[in-house]
Image (cartoon, rainbow, N blue to C red; front, side, top):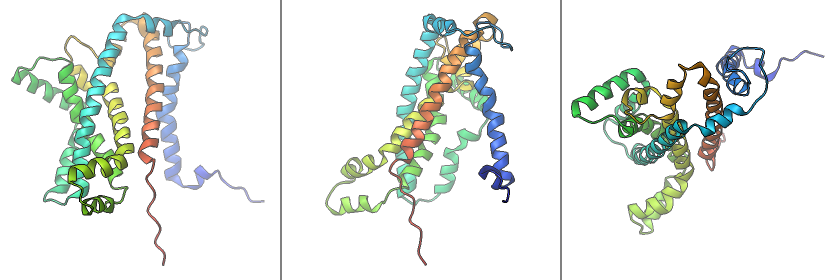
Length: 272
């Protein structure tokens, strides 16, 4: 009987590297919910005991609730605006061929590769020069800048996944371009739209660097968490909050990916 390696090891060095990388990246994160149930205020082993009091304190903290509400307001606005822009941009990139299409797509992705601290400083200088007061509005505008590329690429992958002949058939039957969009394109693109809304919401909800430079007196949740790290006694509440955000983010991203893939059929294999 021959000895066989596990399937994840038979893939070669690249698969092994990917597994080790995932372990290195995500195993430390698992300590976050673990210590959120610790009865002590210090992050150290052994644990002092099991308790839910930090979660109770999290629910009763008014400043935390205000920051959470600010983040939800900004994230909802950003997800809607960036998804609308992403749908329009994806339709242009997938349905039309125009001069400078590839450079334009690369320019659209530029906010994703520019370091956040550079982008934050640049936007702060521009806001000061234009006399725009720092507030949730400036945070939301900056988040739209970085969320729109996410929405566009999600919608591009979705719009390239269904048959464009359906739109042409609708036009041949006498429908206008606007009616064709609402009756044909929009229903087919709905999974991508939902995924875009969820992903851009998470992107805005979790973003810290731009919010740090552009926030005024109203802090978002990441800014609130950062401000609490200076006080050791408040750290367990932050850990409890972080555990809730981690769980919410994982569920939302997984659901968004499931929705994005829903209804997209793989291309049929060609027969020789």
